[in-house]
Image 1 (spheres, one colour):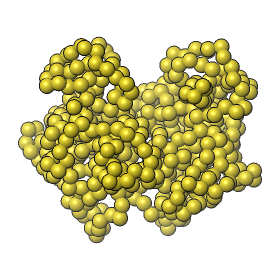
Image 2 (cartoon, helix red, strand yellow):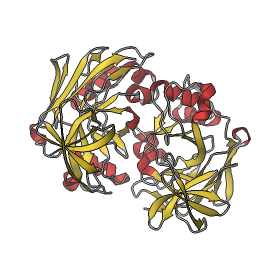
Image 3 (cartoon, helix red, strand yellow):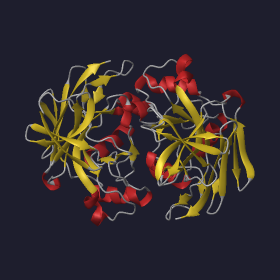
Length: 259
Length: 259
């Protein structure tokens, strides 16, 4: 099933996608909700980030080629990390499918894409075993971890480099039924394929990451984990269109504009 | 005025403190809310974090002596940063006044306190001028940025070092009327004063920090900024009681327990 959030009569609403039609639901994704019986066409609907998490986790460098590239950029020898060092991103940066990515006025003018699988937690818990972790997942969506590399290299933290307004496009919807092993993540820039990798070839997998976070932190419904990206991540400039596709989920499309 | 959140008949409710009595309000802090006419005594009430933010900012190392200590620990020369490098903390770690701070089973068993002023945003905005910043503040509360230093030194990020469950006590309430220039922050461990500093002697002040964040990010009502702490920050172990007091706001008290 595909759940989405969209603007219905001027306010955020939950919907269930049936082909090209949104079945409008009453209630929240993790509260009781029911069909209103009303339907609106997907075409022309303004989509929102499909969930706004209580806590927004990001798994960071989590693919082999990306780890090698980061090591090379920093001039340090490549070695596998001992654990998945979790990061955080800011809800304030989230935008939906088709929303513009705004290039800040005083940035270098170039932003890089990072196409990522997003895991949405459905059932919370603490001390979740890796073997039980996937039963805590509600569904999957797509994220673009947009990054300003000059700030990323210069600043002590990632705050503006990865969390300026509009830097976290996510969507278009949450898909509850996927085949994790068959998925590829594909990134297209202005219609040209520029990156493609097997989605599940992560250094630390979904199960281990959920187990590791929940060793210290109680996960709650709606929390989400962005699972990292693989190389290459390339520059985007104003007017570029970026698409991140993950097989079985869909395509997240956004266009860059100057502030 | 002092606003708080507490458990009323089993569910989170908003209240306004009048002396030792909570006037129960209906609605949310930043939505329309009105007095219900009902009053309950503060004594015995289970207080919650007074706000749950959309985005939880932390100003990081923001006092001179703390900056010097961090430089010494890392073995790098002391120099003032060029800007306030903002960090994030996790809502999942928030607990209220009087809630236990739980020492994780596989930690080193010692946690350190960091007493901090918390700025709660009331009026959102982007590109807020420093001269106008204080008019965007709803009020102030107290935070204890509890930290596990072995993890902080070993890990690539601060995720478990500063965001394990219960590591972010906050409260007891939001005070809307304060005298920023007159405030001291005092930390007591088992009743003994162990740290005291002028709250406003920050490297980057409240006004500059709001201006800087909003240069890149839209602030929203309920967002909050923890403003950092000064030295010393000392070890706490199981059964210790830690109090953070800020003049004109109140006292945030928590006790440490082993998982």
